[in-house]
Image (cartoon, rainbow, N blue to C red; front, side):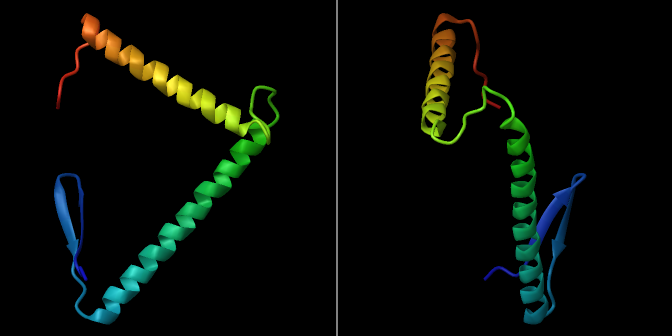
Length: 97
């Protein structure tokens, strides 16, 4: 099991190296707790936003979500086809980073 935690910020790399297994376990448990709580916070904010969006007529209601998903797939397909066609016609240039 990996016991070193590393991160980088402002072009500097930091490493947390626990000195014993208890600290390593505590650090892992606390990280998982923060991760789960962050996930719940994101879901809570999404619930508030979706509750607000349901007031609009164009937002899909229950029973129409499959239709909205199919429309999303169609939009992705049209967008991808446009990117492919514009690349072939020279309208856009794809440059690797």
